[in-house]
Length: 307
Ligand code: NAP
Image (cartoon, rainbow, N blue to C red; front, side):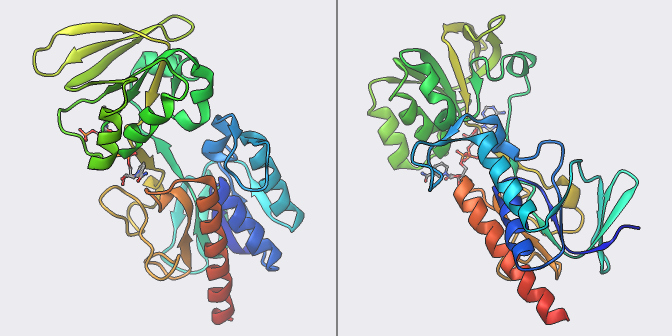
């Protein structure tokens, strides 16, 4: 059995590292179980230009390494492996990585979210070679190119508009004829001459050997297949929170996002949650970091009250 920690942080994006920083700096004994992809989603992006404090932007991997090292400076311990099981039924809480078990007087869940994917083999093969899940991060690389933006929600509308700053043409492709996006966002897209809207179409295949060269579409009403030549495919078809590990014990909404019950505390006393595993609306590095700070402060207060 491992040492007893004051706080076990599960996850290592901006929310997890900020929670670890605040808790460690608050003189608590902290273990961050950071998974196999320390740094989370931001390590798959290039330059982050909207995180305050970096006038010229900051490489995503570097930003996350700085956050990690900053928490380590105040004493955070790390385990770089995925959590396989949790037991929050009694205190101290227990968290497993394989056969190893770690104990915490409190837990902060900061496991983030993943972009929803189509699930095509060609999509995985051409990821980062023309296929992207982040227009804000990768749009710059598509100057004067033709791109497709997939989805019918606010993200798709917003990112289609954003992409017209770079691309010569943007196809907005949606699987239905009705959009989920707010009317104002739809109107902006409809008024944008650089955007051509294609509805009732699904992407059957992303074409290209080493880079994207086109997509094959299927009309959902007629079944007709067609091909578009283009260089970029941006997915904006929603996100899936990484919360499967907690399904049976932590209360979540219908989309599996963790629900806050008392500030950042979940339905289990002493278990807190922060960042994209809770937030389906803002999903920014800065809002996740802020949430991690709040969770650490809430955990600290709660632990004080237990003493
Ligand atoms: P969303 O609202 O869940 O929309 C996802 C879209 O992707 C839907 O149109 C959905 O189609 C489509 N989709 C899902 N799975 C698909 C698949 N396998 N193949 C093809 N299409 C698929 O997600 P979101 O647009 O990321 O928005 C998430 C939340 O953030 C919303 O609450 C939104 O209002 C908010 N948001 C707000 C702003 C803003 O206010 N500025 C900007 C961005 C996001 P169906 O409609 O057919 O299900």
